[in-house]
Amino acid sequence: MSVMQVTEIMKILPHRYPFLMVDRIVEMDMEAGTVVGIKNLTMNEEFFQGHFPGNPVMPGVLQMEAMAQVAGVMLNSRAGNEGKTAYFMSMNNVKFRKMVIPGDQLRIEVESVRLRTRMATVYGKCVVDGAVVSEAELTFGYGA
Image: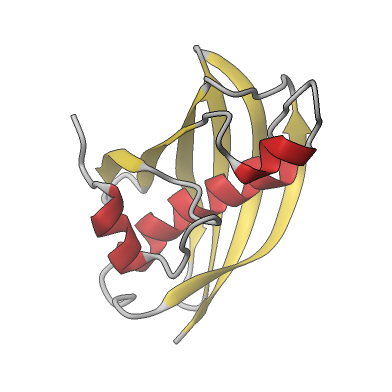
């Protein structure tokens, strides 16, 4: 069950191919401050061509970017933030636990930690087949 298709996501996020890292939002609870997005990974992703030839692995920094984009959908959808952009400012307590490869479906789970008028902090994790592959605390600042 999809809450938001990619065309709706593109109305909220400024990112475009090849840098749009979320295909679908499958859950979003604004009251609880949680959102879940999906990124389907195929061998056609540009980053797999060079990272690494013969052993394609999704770069960890792109997993962080995927988390930030899923968080951005929620943050930019909050009342009062319409038309604003949540800019990714920092990441803390980052952990990479398993490799992400072509054919994997990245389930990106994000929950609010602190929400302020001009800043927000969230905890995010990427999950493949029920196993956490990466996690981090991300901080954002709002722009116009």
